[in-house]
Amino acid sequence: MTQPSTTKQKIFSSYEVFIIAVLTFLQFTIILDFMVLSPLGAILMPKLHITTAQFGMVVSGYAISAGLSGLLAAGFADKFDRKKMLLFFYAGFIAGTAFCALAQDYYALLLARIFTGIFGGVIGSISFAIITDLFKLEVRGRVMGFVQMAFAGSQVLGIPIGFYLANKWDWHLPFVLIVVVSLIVGVLIVMYMRPVDSHLHNKIQRNALKHLFQTVTRSEYAKAFAATTLLATGGFMLMPFGSAFSINNLGLSADVLPALYLVTGIFSMGTGPFIGKLTDSIGKYKVFVLGSVLTSVLVAYYCNLGVTPFWLVTLISVLMFAGVSSRMIASSALISAVPDPQDRGAFMSVNSSVQQISGGIATFVAGLIVVQSPDGKLERYGALGWVVIGATALTVFLMYFLNQYVMQKAASAPPKPTVVEATPQEVAPSIE
Image: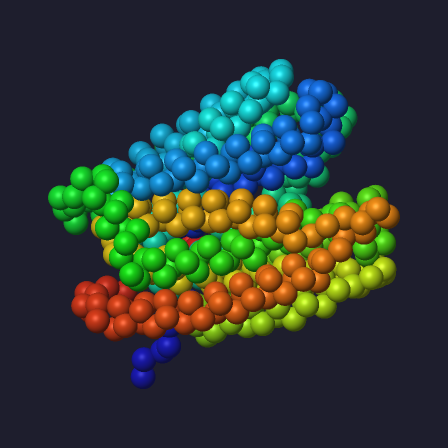
């Protein structure tokens, strides 16, 4: 009688674990570089003698340049080894962040942020193209779950540390810290990441402009871009006014906000991998719908609150971020399956640009909806919440058709060759 094997099948090889880890840390540096500037506003404006409008230009300069560079790079994104593309743009991002650390006046900082955005705005799309190339759709939710931890990690570790360094010593130090961490990540990529060039086997005869045009005009891709636009609309509308709403409407003091962000971020880091695993086990669209329902219910409640105890605000924030994370992880995994292999780089670049630009527009529109009364309270925040809920419902509708397309595409794909099962001695160490 044959004894059952006691060796547990590993999901990821040791090399795949390395790829997940290095891309997570890479995303951490990119997100932190973007997010750390907002809390530094209170320090930067008096230090550089700039107005709120000028500071807003510094923040938006990154997003606008990132969105435009993504569109310009899209036509070339599938013509090169993705590792080389990643290193080229990451080197530019590190140089731009170093320029931020050296800036001594408003114009130097503005130019440095624009330069950083030109390179940093493309890196996310290249990273997601690499994930799509290297990981099967069946496990891609787990991968996205780990990579999305970078958002929570920047909130838990990066922003408090960066703000502490700026407040204690100098506002340049957070950018110095990002440069140091980025250099370490870059060296690891150079030394250990293998070439990612399987897409080059699919010969592309189109020139860059034709490749870009055919990518943005293909109907299935256009639906994905529309879904990304609505996803960004929901997220960017509430986020910029969150701290002002917490203080002026919910009655929290500014001193407890770091604790609120810390607790929310820790829970987000803990739930990310679990949500990723759930998307692979029960279905990406199902998790997206569940996350959308949870987010909508909590947004409707939260945006109409008055003075609220800290513990209740924290609980709502944790649950709301769980819903948002479910939407982000599930949608990222599902949308990654839409493009054909020869279009992945261009598709991801355009998708990233759409996200950046639509997020900037959403923030502007939200500023037109919400007004601040003389006593400091934000009015029409509840109306803003209903706009977010409406965008969420439309996204669920669009994602249904994308899910149907991905399922049909998977069903019509030729069967993959059988892989010979490795012996217990050949199984590389991995994470579950």
